[in-house]
Length: 335
Image 1: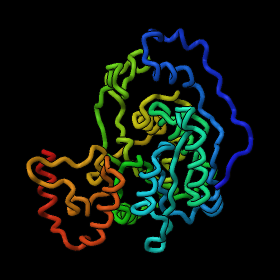
Image 2: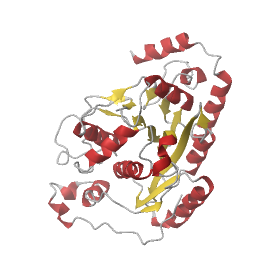
Image 3: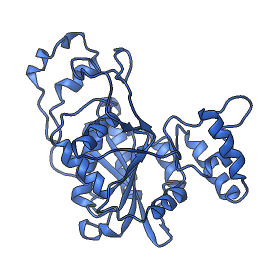
Image 4: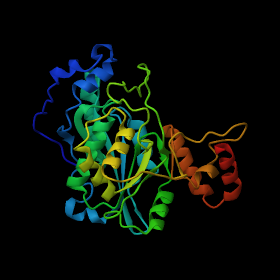
């Protein structure tokens, strides 16, 4: 954990961006993205340079949990710290945790929320903060800045779970899965999640996923994994960062990662145990039944209190579920 003392650098706006076709017709969030799209480097306000023990000791880190979190999401971070994000040694391997964040968009909240993050950093040493606004379209910037941080401060980490702060992760299952691969994450490709193939860009300007045709003319994105939760190797993390240097920033972060993988000559893969869109069961079936989560790696969209309840339930029910029955129910819902 370290704080910067130097004054923040300012990324100057691209004054020629108004030549972008139909620029004046774009929503304000898209105008802002296009105006500062060229800015791919920002100073760190909280660096956490020793999270992996320094570059030379990062080979000791088997799994780094890198969680994207907005400054105000304190309750989510606390719930993760107390549950699946606990920094422990599992079966003789080290797991470490980082929350990736920017600065509040509201200047009124900036001072107190930055102070909150500073307190969290001093208490837990798990905050990585950059001096750019924490907005949806800046998730891509946050992602690439994190990959750069890994290359500098944690270059020999084996594997990374990269996800949102409203996901529930069964850390034991993630580790078991990684063990089963028998791969060295420093030298082998791995990029798995809920795979999306043939996904079209959203053209409705009112949607937060909106992509104007002038920015992306294609009808379909390249294959990518949903950004709610992805497991990747250290090798792939660095490959993505190298590829990103050749690709302009894109407003949809997970689709951008698919572009970077393609540039690097790598492919994303699917894992049935990673549910970016959550678990949805019809009828009177309780989708919050711990038995459905006992064999999952990651499920999206959890409230902080739900993380605590589910984590506790899994410790109790770890050996009390019938796998075949629940697997059949889940498979039936997918058909």
